[in-house]
Length: 400
Image (tube, rainbow, N blue to C red; front, side, top):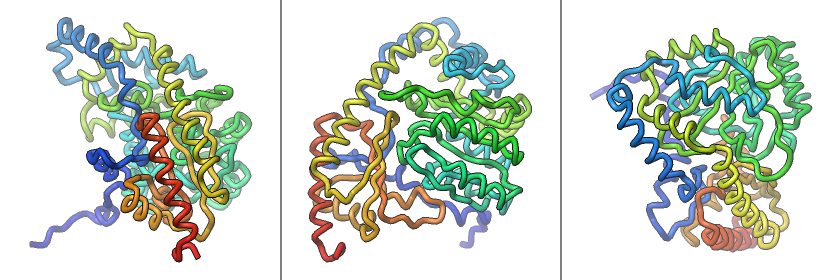
């Protein structure tokens, strides 16, 4: 039987990260692959209490259809949270999404026609690349360094591509590199967006996960012309299962996202929205963030210490001030896919080869590690195993 799929299905391939989430089902495997938050720090009791309150007081309405824009008290609470980040907006500037991943898909629907140019960091979040690619854009990759996207290179790309639809960036603890865009570059990217009449999509799921260094204002803070579309999420700072994210942008852009969302899922889980809303009213989210950041700081430090002390010296790595990821840059002769196979077979350690974070592949000498979901002792054991793999790979014929 011949099934006539749409042309876009030619781009449909499983996400390496989503597939790798199957590995932890084997308790002998230590996985640094998925960017899952630490489940040990989910506020289970507080969310349970909020759930009971919602069912006892608003059960019938919480189980009904709801408006696409999202539960108003939740939007008000998130606006207050954003104000604490230096972004002031009104209720008409925000809509609740089914996770910020839906925001990426709606961005593709709203802005991308076939062969349009989308400018991204190199490397970039594979979930964004996968969301955008179904609309068949041309990806233009912009160089990065330890201070984030290179603004001179970005301007050169904007000059060369005057019809670019938007710039996609993760300015805080970027996925996959862990890098953070400097204050000066945050200001300049807004200036460039205004100069070249292009939208910025600021994907910010990790903003609050800072455990060293100075907190910086979001790019949206500098937006006076309505050029920045801000995507936020509760997944990394509270819990992912509720699928509560948001878009904050000009009223015109938000209204267009709402229309597209109506054709997708009508509205985000109303029960989940009300539970999160009640949690934000009853609990101190900032206190919770302090708690999880301390745990992540310890995990990061363990990973970096073993990288520095036990890995081959020719392997370089980022030193993130927050977030969930460390990025490894190996010598050009290394092949991360080969190392992955060797690590799984010999040491039962899982990670993400870095070529998956580039829209057109390549860069086989890169690796993303996540320290978030493993216990401290698992990080120690897993990193020691991976160090052994790296040393044996260095001396193997595959390297020579």
